[in-house]
Length: 158
Image: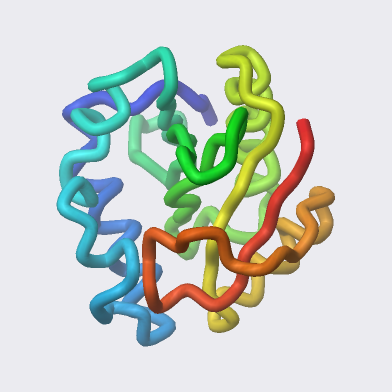
C-alpha cells in the first residue's frame, strides 16, 4: 500500500467513498460533508492552495483508492488547520490505515506551520471518535462548525 497526494484521477472514487461512509450511518443529510460542493472534486480544492491545504489517498498495490484524509486552514482559530474528510473503504477499516493517514496529516500540518488541528465529527461515527481520542485529540465546545449537523468537536496541539 502507498499513501500519496490526491490527483484528479482519484476524485470520483474518493468522493464515492466519502458519500458511502456517510450514507452508511444515515449522515447523507444537509449539514454534512455529503453535500460539500468539493466532495467529488477534492483534488481541485486541496491543490488550489497547497501552502495551506493537503489531501492524501491510500492506494493498494493494484492502484485502487482505499481512502484518504486531508487538512485545510481553519480561520476561526489562529495557527490551526482542520483535519478533514477521513474516509476509508469498508475493506480498509480496522487495519491501522486511519492512524497512518492522520499521522501523515499531522506531519503535514506541522510542516505548513500550523500549531494545532481541529476537527468536527458526529456521534454516529464511533470508530472515528475512538481513533481521535486514542491519538490525543481532546473534546472541545464547537468553534464555528462548518457542518451544522456535526455534534462532536476535537482539537490537538501539534
